[in-house]
Image 1 (cartoon, helix red, strand yellow):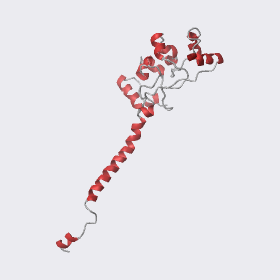
Image 2 (image 1 turned 180 degrees about the horizontal axis):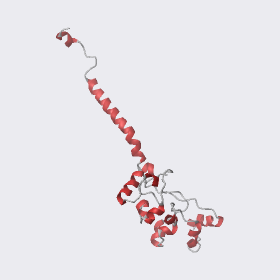
Image 3 (image 1 turned 45 degrees about the horizontal axis):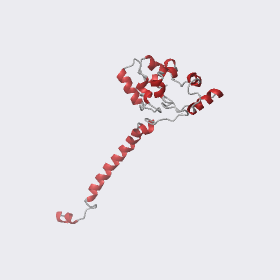
Image 4 (image 1 turned 60 degrees about the horizontal axis):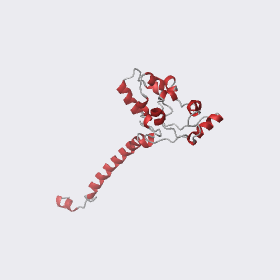
Length: 191
């Protein structure tokens, strides 16, 4: 065939298909990257971590009043934090130490009084939760003078407690890098 004959043969695909192919390939790359990045971003977002969501409790407990007005320190109620991995929640008897004398006729603490009379613990809702495979020891952090507010935020300024920090592995590692504790092997937290 001659050159003149080649010029008369129509193209298999019209010229606009080159642009369409490029757009489709770029779109596939963007969608593929989005399919990987989106779940990671969602898992670390406040939506998934529960960050900033106030947790409603069976008794409306205002930390602001108990800390600022009454001067009760965190470790009075959460005394397990000093000596065990778990901070714990105060038993009904500790609350009734005061509330047997003050606000004892209030409707707001009626569930507390019922718990005390029936010897049934109050089922508080967990605010800060880590995955089951993570081991966190409050006593080690308290012994190293890590303030409660470092992880829990200013609970003394909250009417209803909510999770301030994301409590993700990255967040913990950033803190450990910043404070440089002596033991940072994975087996310390992951058992």
